[in-house]
Image (cartoon, rainbow, N blue to C red; front, side):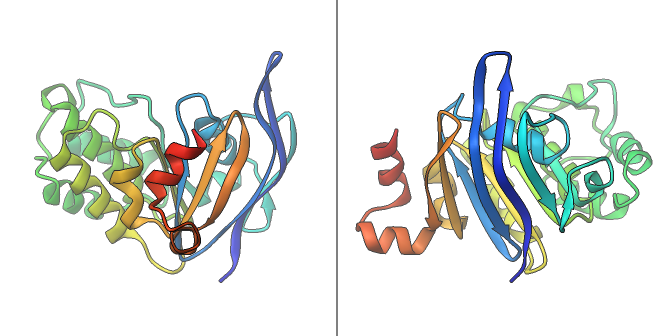
Length: 230
């Protein structure tokens, strides 16, 4: 399979603080990646640079062979951890809003997704629980036709039922032409879905590799390895 996302010697500084320190990694299509680490490890910064929302200090990021720019934004669907939903909007209005913003946004697919997630298209965001808002954010990303899907802490604040529904939805959206990257510190919830894992610590890749191989070589779960690293 092709590496459709390449990160080379990527450094990002905020004033004197180094958030990412010469990070290099390739992401292969047809795989689900877990970007794992505690808060402040650099996960969100890496995703925002890939999405074109933050400018790197040095290094390169290539999406489908092209350096990141406004042109590569169409290839990346990113669900940030921040709450970007307007409380006064109905779910169906959000679908219209996103279809105006992104040419690849499929409104019919979006409505079908939220119905699966037990959200009415007539519901206002302000009427939704934290769990339903989390599901809605994931559906907005998945309804796009992108090459790379990134979800930043999609399970944060969700109840166990919502976590399971969100992960099932993400895994159902996966196919061999896509790359899915999920950041989280909730390793036990993600482990069974992941093909590859990347441990970030203080802006540096501490450990990375095939999830199954890492389990076999170490005789431990990914969650147990995570606890050792952090």
